[in-house]
Length: 114
Length: 115
Image 1 (cartoon, each protein chain N blue to C red):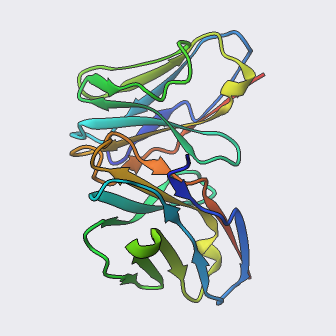
Image 2 (cartoon, rainbow over the protein chains, first blue to last red; image 1 turned 90 degrees about the horizontal axis):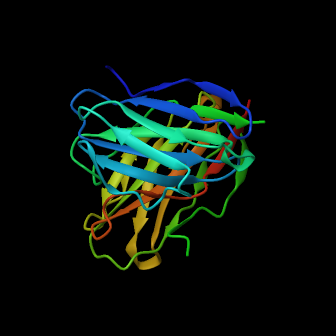
């Protein structure tokens, strides 16, 4: 596609439920990143994919968070047993050749846990 | 420790004023990259500029200019003759050759341009 597409754009869920957030990167972009932006905060790195593998998962805040990428394309970020502190905007970005190249960001998924 | 510091949380200026957004970074790498992104109210971050650590030339693009000073570890961003459309949150980011896999973002500066 022309840009990085994320769905849903907004998600409201009850505490304790699982959620899946989807990212569709720019076609041909091998690198994919997930970041989290809490209200008034900067961007917090979650995970990086190169192709289908995730060489850097260091940012995932707990074992309730997981992510996968299939076919070197679409990625899904899953949050199990959501907590209120998980409420944030989850941003996906992709790039052509790895971390020294500017990312292209999606518009994000705003997650609200009630 | 915060690798990228944007000390200005919020700035308000009147249209046509100049405004400088500060960014101070911290790294031990000799090869690194600095970025500025704009996040308008729509939410999508837009890439503005990338500099590598070996190029200290200042850059001007229209009303935007960037001042990179390794001696003070700063990469400041100036908007000349600000316009209402410049209202956004601006993020400075650092990428290091050694860690490579992620950008370190500052907490952002929210700029409001008042008509």
